[in-house]
Image (cartoon, rainbow, N blue to C red):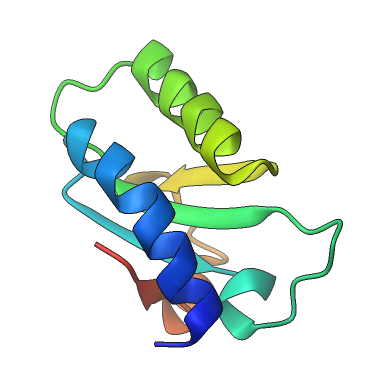
Length: 95
């Protein structure tokens, strides 16, 4: 795993586990090592059963506080069918 993803994993895994997230992966420019200073971090998660929209948004905000950058938080179930295969091909599992 590339060092930049190892750092991200170390930063966010405790929060993801505390929130009950079952699995998580990074995708997009950050996963490809192409992120610039203006890039967000794209995270794909499998939230725990019963996680509300309020809980989901709170987790997103907490991750942004930890990383000090914008986070695009997406659930596996929420993936667009048109983009699903392309996104899943580029993911790097962090949890």
